[in-house]
Length: 94
Image (cartoon, rainbow, N blue to C red):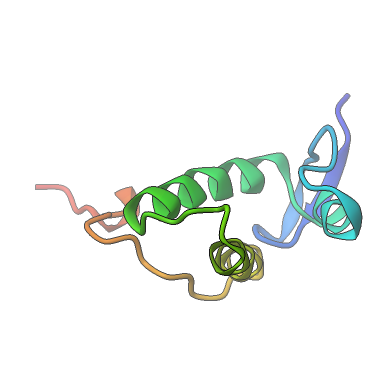
């Protein structure tokens, strides 16, 4: 049986990450409060943000922006929209 965690994104007990995804205290917090599914969902959104907004993660401002968006995502706060993206949940049957 895999480890579980109460996911702050989805507000239920879910499969936990195998290891901290970031170094230090922030990584440990994510490990103990974010599910594997929520982390994977964040990775997809993060990739879209980096690509669409042409972020250079070598720049401190870009890293700070991504970390702020990550915190908002996991805390169920509104995150910046990616231009042109339509969520599958928003598509209505034709």
